[in-house]
Amino acid sequence: MTFITEPTHYHQTVLSDLQGSWSLLRESVVENYNFDNAAKLLFHIDEATSWESVRNLAIMKNSFILIKNIALQSHAPQVILEAIEEVQYDLDETLQALKDGEIS
Image (cartoon, rainbow, N blue to C red; front, side, top):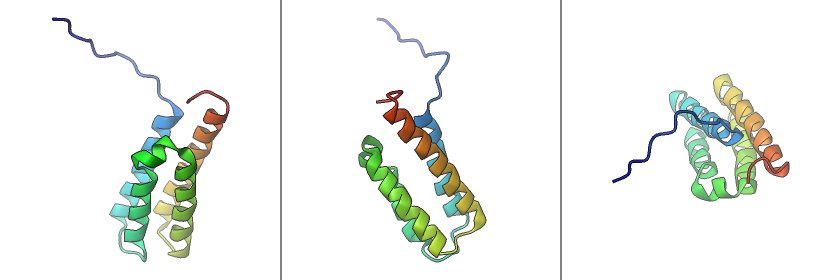
């Protein structure tokens, strides 16, 4: 029987950065849950990171815009707004990499 060996190195991509920033945003909302529309924000974060959105980044982008607007209108804590900025940066980088053919 042949065993497949575990790779010893991984190439970090913009997609893994994007996944990480979404995770940190969700964690920030959970840790700072006492503000208006926190539940709504979590719902839309989960939708933005669903399989459907990951397979179609245009859906993720639309969800992100909604999330940002909800957070701003709800006067979310600064830590959440900073996490949203990180998601925006990584999402922009990912969309550019997709456009440039670096990812598919």
